Image (cartoon, rainbow, N blue to C red):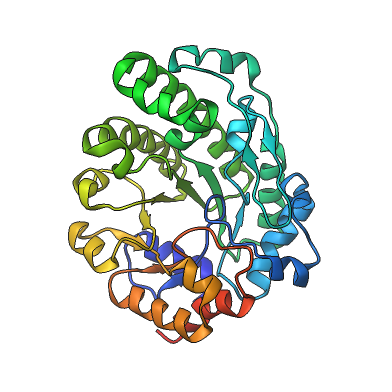
Length: 336
């Protein structure tokens, strides 16, 4: 069974020959220093060059790391397109937002003035290249930063969280604007050939928002995005950081094909609280960087036995993660 067929079957809740093994991209970046050395393609140049971005994504698949390709390799593309200044980092440091463009949720209309394409065309063109050059045989995953995390890159996060309560109406208007922009970017990725859209929203956790605001702000706007993308016939993944105990009930309302969690969430617990849902994760990135291939293989098997149908790192890979450790996930999955 090919990787694209396998992933689609699993995402649709059907039986495949074995679990899938992917790493989406975006927040869950799969590029390491050793992979760049092997591929001869380097960051930060690949963040802004479609050819290099596509080649580096293909190297992940070609060198036996994961059964997919995915772009971009950071979480700053969306905020940059709305006016936020970005430091592009280095070959070991990811890009980061270095300034805010608004001081309150009430100022969101400033974003309509500041909006610019930024690197969005680069990401879309890289997806188009990957789709054409891999001839549709390998899943192409497009990535989006979730609404809460994007909003928290446009203004000071603590003020943003406070104003969800104090300026509730304006906060919804701000997040609706951000969500509309994210949908537009996602649709451009789909038109270019993305088979799956993965949404990572690390700032939109139940630990930070609590159950009430997680449902009111995170679930509401994630589902707007998911409904648009599902209508286009693509698979959808949502990755949520942090402990899930406070918000399993609310997370069950997220309409994505797949839910992904980081390593602090026991897969057995997630499976018990989310019956019938397809779960992804969550091999420790600490073990991937500092452990051995044998340890990674053991953790992979444990995750699969306890509820994960799609094996993946729990978060973005550390840049110093040895290539043999990264490859150990897929090698272990092939024996499941």
